[in-house]
Image (cartoon, rainbow, N blue to C red):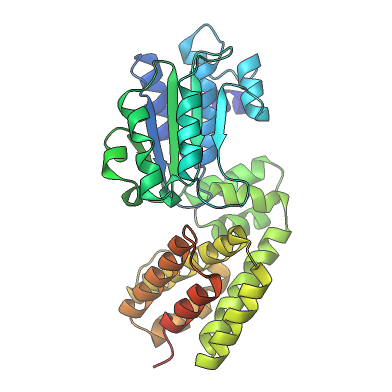
Length: 339
């Protein structure tokens, strides 16, 4: 009963109680907005919060404070991803949404809901959408239908057009406390020592931690990706270009796979930058602490920051038609250690 009460209190969302409370109060006061922008890094729980909020908006429970009940027809359909009044706007190939998809979304949002209170659209990775395509959503934001709600998900708010940001309520998500993640894993049957290890490696990313609990291959994959980065940094120019060729051949046109690789590398460079500044914060990649410390002694904070920015630029390039091989070439030559 205690677990059920806690789940009802925080909508089953781990580590973002304040965000749940803010959204709940907007419902209780009848002041929900037509557009929301949930921001935060990968695997922080943006999608889970968006689905829970969609359930709360369309839950059939009589008392607003009891929503989402997670048992009614609407809540169950949203959980299954089969609710006709919930639009999950994301491309199948991992590429950002195009202007045509945005325009079609706007058209559908203007239609009356089939059976629910609201017609809700969740737009994933909206910061990867090109500015012109983002702008195509502006008219819908300026003149929304009374029953339309849009939830935009983005890693960083600054890559969203100011005209979009100003018309949405921004909910910035932060990494969850590691002890909270560990407790959540133990509650799900994970042995305490393993839960402590996964929580430490998660860097506060509850979504990643829960996925790693279910799939041990995720931990092996992460390790292999970090080994690849170490090999790149240990090589000279020719060796780095060889690694670029190997990776580009391996991923082919699968930009989602390359995005996953670069996002893992981003967490590594953040750890290096913190070490360069002498931060007492424990590295998110705690199993690589010695390696990260040694690298932080070889390069300065400026080098670590430059590597972080270069990795981010490579990620941004995936939203365009940039050549993957050339992007990796530029990235590896920008990384420190060649001087």
